[in-house]
Length: 241
Ligand SMILES: NC(=O)c1ccc[n+]([C@@H]2O[C@H](COP(=O)([O-])OP(=O)(O)OC[C@H]3O[C@@H](n4cnc5c(N)ncnc54)[C@H](OP(=O)(O)O)[C@@H]3O)[C@@H](O)[C@H]2O)c1
Image 1 (cartoon, rainbow, N blue to C red):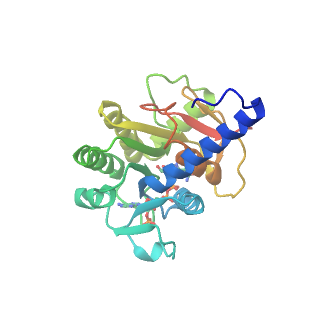
Image 2 (image 1 turned 45 degrees about the vertical axis):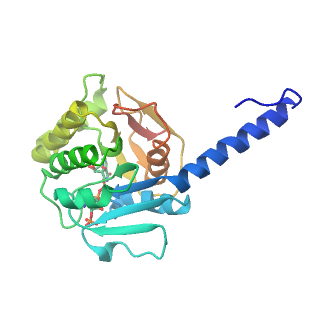
Image 3 (image 1 turned 120 degrees about the horizontal axis):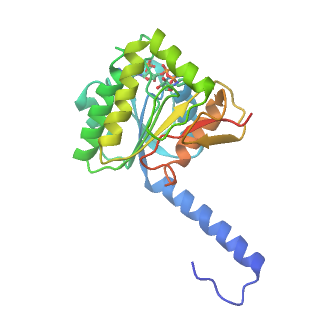
């Protein structure tokens, strides 16, 4: 933005701050987000943050009893992420998709992740959408990793104890990596269901901590709507130790 030369540095700073906030607020009014998995442990924090920040969104739920709110800017779509038509229904008219899909209660089939990802990629292409932000575990591997002892141990443990869902989450990464979407796959350590928002660290190579606050995660996911740093990447995030 070009500013008149007669303005002082602090005037410039105030104007630039005002301008950035104006753009942020305008963006919230103008964009609509499709949310998948918003009734789960981390998803509830995401939905609460979206409501608090004034976003308009559509929410896919399996069981409508799991989401009750009088927030006016949310449209609830009932359906299952393994059903292509339900995915089209929830993403239609939106500008970006955020997913905190997990197996839930009662647990879905452990191959849900690749099924949902296949549906989401196809539906987003069909609807001419690009931005997809999704969470997964730190067990997913990428060619850019240099996992340390802890993340390597956790990855092996997941493969030994939950071989089907862990293999399926790796398949989710492979599908995204091959897709033309602007995806970000956020790799997580244990999620702490707390309202505190400690500072977080990110890394493309190894998990920088043992825990992530659900409230910090929600802000990070929303921040990815306007941040291009992790397009087509799979960052680990964790609370700063
Ligand atoms: N929790 C952790 O500590 C942790 C740690 C590392 C990584 N992660 C990863 O983070 C992601 C989210 O984890 P979370 O613990 O928040 O998940 P979660 O509590 O299991 O929530 C899963 C969400 O997905 C929904 N869901 C399940 N099956 C579905 C289906 N077939 N169709 C539509 N929606 C469906 C659930 O809906 P219902 O309300 O109907 O069940 C719920 O909203 C997962 O990928 C998980 O592996 C979690």
